[in-house]
Image (cartoon, rainbow, N blue to C red; front, side, top):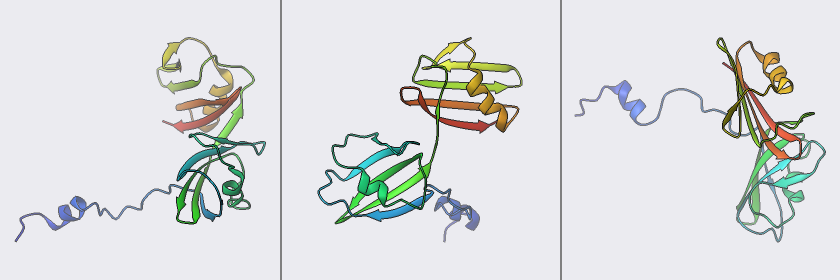
Amino acid sequence: MSSLDPARAWLAAGITGLARGKEWDVVATAEAPGAPGDEVVFLALPDGRLRAETEWDGDLRPLADALAGEIEPPFRALARRLADLWAVGAVAIDIRELSEDPDGDAVEIARTEEGVSVRIDDVPTARPLPELERLGEARAATYVVRATRVEGRLFEVEVEPL
């Protein structure tokens, strides 16, 4: 007989009673005859263009079309080959065209009770980025805004209240 408390046994098995977080906003299957490889991550940009984030030399349109009517761009999708079909999961993302280029590919702005800190490509800077700060302020008094360059002045933006 085990001396392990039954409640701890459930936790040890990974059973907590807590719902698992949602990974995808929408999931679909697609036919993509002749598509290379077994997996691709891609973005659907606000203007409808598709952009592979992983190495890919096939047509992304059949994979994105499987999501039509279920989710609108912008979104990030992962497609995996399952025998003759592809499983495609997508999650909505926020893509913004910034009016001022921050001169870096990754921006993080944190507003705490102590003030604002800005990092561009992991380097602290005193440069103000009011456009991104306003996005944080719209969500909470204290926040973190992360912006990652997609292309040109298009950035994927995430805002998290603290």
